[in-house]
Length: 630
Image (cartoon, rainbow, N blue to C red; front, side, top):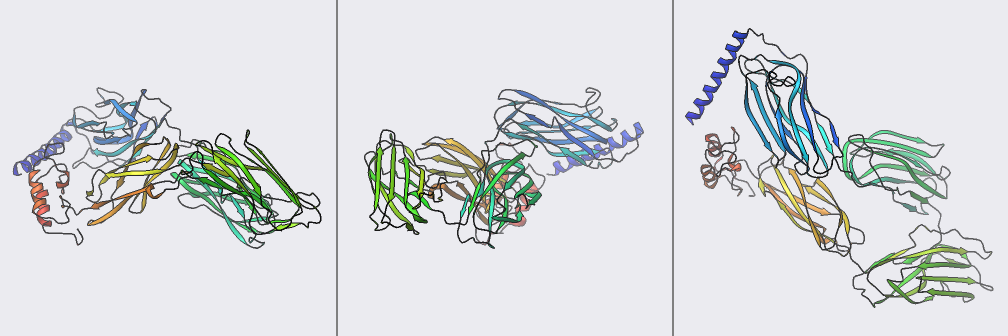
């Protein structure tokens, strides 16, 4: 160790002598920076390149004064980009567009395409004068290896001024973005989509939300919502976190609302806006969502599917519908016979009704049906027609004198239909052309919004998380840990879903999976940070796959493991700093990063990157420290 200290002191003395000689021989006066230097990646946006194509960037410095050395680390996403060449533009005597004056000394130049980093450090050497002005620091050439979005980031920077001792030069950094990925369209809707509630009488309030699903890099949104001013008043508009309201306006006379919000960027499912309405009358109102604009963090427009409007009604509407609304049962194999019901509710003073039911005749066979009168009235004429060739059922019931008009308040079953499974698959049971009439032949208002249909399937949907693994299960505070999640489709249908990673109860990552085939798996990778966490504690790492449509078994949609935060010096991770930790450090003594005996966990004190006497001394001071609950 004594040799190491002497060597460092010698380097320091030589550097000071060199600077003094240089200042005397060149008679250069010390100059302090009067403006903030700027380090910029040019161009700032590269997009729409295919796999295999190449592009170059320049990292430049502007308005710097008295620069004598720099140390820069640059990073990118290695799963998308690979650096194929690099060139440092020093000194200006060789590269007129570059920086620094000769002679120069290279302290570091390392490329790591596995991590996606490039580190470079250069310094002028006496009698070189300091550099002032602007120039190119280095150039990188990349090849595109994948699709996605990658920040081209100045991860860290140190600029040294020409002075004794050298002072840091403040600077601003401006990163760039590479993008060759178009995210899938987002989904927007009014939630709840239908508010049909007779208890929402005048003077009562309710709230409707504007929801977005599968947002990707959303930085700005804007929309309009229209409503019936004879039924509703808009009272309040709230734009919840992570968004901040840019504008929130109510045009009451026109029955319109305009809302805009922004954030740095957001991906996932969010509530964009909460709107409180005041009911002023009985009736119905469409909540019409339109003129939607979505932009990403680069200011580019984001695509979205057709929006889903909302509907409000505080009048009781007659309703005829199929029950259950969906039947997904893997036990219903070919040949199985089962029944479905047609039900009626809220029909007041009706004197007849009719409807059609259409289905896929390749999936189901209709064996028959029987009509069930909702009351004991017997003066009616029923019609039942089944056309298996096209998959159609027609039912008509007409009352006649001396029958009086019929009222059905509570739900009643008015028909039972017998089906047999013909083939595996799925089909919508589409209830359509509904007509309910009174004793004068007039049409009685009824609900027909899609909720009257049903869905039958003999296939199952099931997403399962099989494994969650950590690159390390015990780390020091402040370390990053890689998480691998294996998720599979154990159902019968291709499925799209998302997987959210939670760490210590907070969202740590979010990944979308599109059309994963049955009986297949995919590995998803995340990174979690342990900054601010307390040693001697276990923190949960939880992966949850979203429920897919028609999925019944959701018990296997989540899986958890635990990450331990160790005390500094607890190399073995057993909750106590003892002889085993000292021994582990001794084995790695004098090793550096990349050496066969290197042990990252033993590097507990500066100088970082080497196991030396300072690490052993730290362990000695902490010897015997232990966790209360190891």
